[in-house]
Amino acid sequence: MAEEIINRVANSKLVTFNLEDLYPQGERVLFDIKDWLLEGFVLREKDFRESAKIHDWSHYEGKYVALTCSSDAIIPGWAYMLLSTYLAPVAKKVVVGDLEMLETVLYTEILQNLDVSQYEGLPVIIKGCSRRPVPQNAYLQLIRKLQPVAKSIMYGEACSSVPLFKK
Image (cartoon, rainbow, N blue to C red; front, side, top):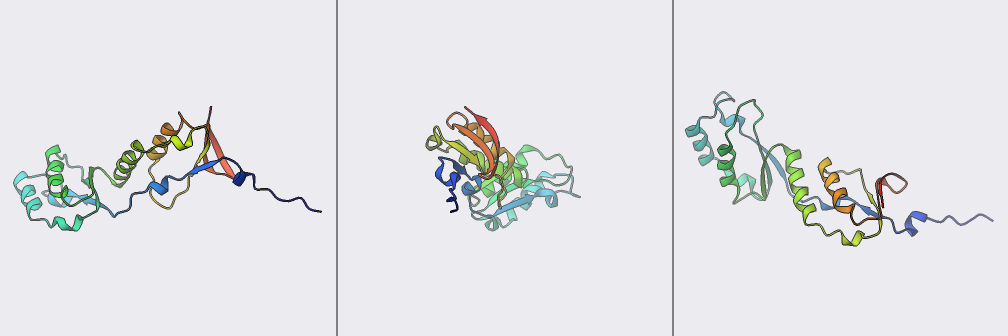
C-alpha cells in the first residue's frame, strides 16, 4: 500500500508575501522635456513657460507621471516644479526621474503605511517573480519592515526558497 502524500507547505504556518499584490493600478507616463529645449539642450525660460502654458495637460488625467530629460541638458529645479503645478490637478502622482524611480516612490508610500502585525512570529516567504515592474528597493523596504516581526524571512517560492533572516 502506498503512503499518502502530505503537502507539508500547505499545512505549515508559512505565509507568502507578494509585492505585486500591492501594485497601484494606473497608467505610467514618462514626460521628457527634451523637446521643449532649444536644440534639446538649452532651457529658455520664456519659451519653456509658453510650452507649459499651451500644453494639453488633460492627457495625464489619473496617470502616474515621471518627469525627465533624456538629453545631457542641465535643468534648473524650478522647471520641474513649474510642470508639477500643471500636473498636480490632473495626475495621480508626479516625480522627477525615470519610470523605475516612479515605481520606487509609489511602493515607498505603500510600504510606509503597511501594517505588518499579522506576520508576527510567522515564517514569511517574499515572492520573487512578478509580472509587474516591482523595483528592487521595494524588496529592501519590505524586508526591513518585516524583520522586526517575522520569525523568519525567505525569498522565492515555497519549493525553492533562499533563507534571508531567522530570529
